[in-house]
Length: 55
Image 1 (tube, rainbow, N blue to C red):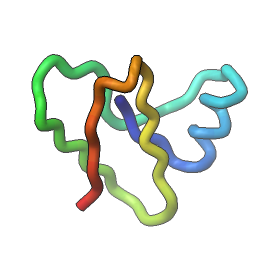
Image 2 (cartoon, helix red, strand yellow):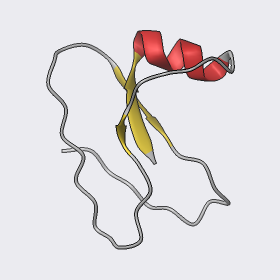
Image 3 (cartoon, helix red, strand yellow):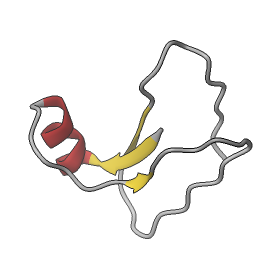
Image 4 (cartoon, rainbow, N blue to C red):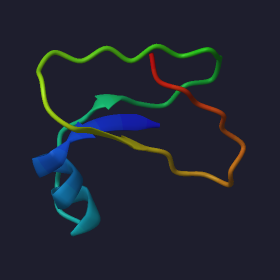
């Protein structure tokens, strides 16, 4: 699970290298903080075992 801004989300979708906040977690809950305004994308890879919410 990780967060990316618009440019890096587009890179992710295109299969290119991208920068992100977050990473691999083995415990929950997880807090991911970012600096900067704009739209952010939560990218969750896995089999649907995740629950998430935004504050």
